[in-house]
Length: 459
Image (cartoon, rainbow, N blue to C red):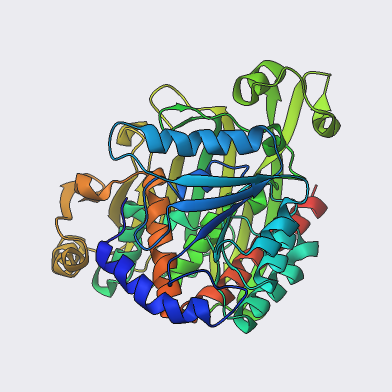
């Protein structure tokens, strides 16, 4: 997705003074200059899937030499050489063991993109904002409770240095989720959010992912360390970051969450996905398990990965449950799936993405117990929804109403990275994040890291 030229011009004008105000963060003439730090996840490349107006086409990359770096550069080259709407990025690469110190010393850009091995990410974030760089980081920004305070301090440092630290929350831009949030704000349809119980939460979000997957037209090669939870993080602190974020974003939109007062963990659990050596070879192109994975190998040939997790918790008294499951490969014709329900006093808003929906996320509005006016309520609320999302309709089905979403809104996961980039550039232009974003990022990572600690104790 290409950002608006008008937005780009605004960036160039307004960011000039911001960039010049800090010598550490200054580059030239207000343009955004990207740095990619140690890319090890394909999300680093997806930030550059399309050209971004107001962003220099030269991107400086700092990384150790190796397969992770080459895979990243190959993806960028693929974007540059594709037949339709090719990009024209120029990657200036520094390879060396001192890549991080070299990046800090060179000051060759003003926005650092981080998406890779998570073991050192919290440390990288702290030192990078401390040196006066803006940071756009893939999730998770922290994978253990022991590092949580370091991340919290990094947000304070970013504020002091007048730079923006932000994580890439692509799921906020999935259209069925956006519409679930929009309908939940229509009291005539939804009523008010139930409180629920731990056994029957008011909000449930379940996500199913796959190690073997197709990205940008080819089977994704994953680095071997992706299966090492000491480097990637366990599932309960990785993908659940998105789900916890959505619970906050939908239930209490644009409201500040205080992690010390508003969050109470009920329970948490974790379990493994087992992977054969042949399956491991198919996704990593490596013939054997590396030494650092042997601690997780049983019977000499089965790798056990703690990629699955569930958190049952309360947010301002609302009971919520989030869970992530990783399978090896999706059934034919399927892909990653998402299930979500928000239970209101008048209606339930449910996203399903199974075989019946042809594995496409579909939003349903179903009557809560005793509500006899759903049809009139939905029709009354629809004009307000259409004002924000023109073309959205509803159709009657046996269980209630299905929300009919025009194809123009169904961009796909990869396009959402452009949406996040645009929002981040908007924040850079404004010179700050909304008041709720930083405390809610802190609350989100408190939830995931504390849940991991609880899950480890609950064997």
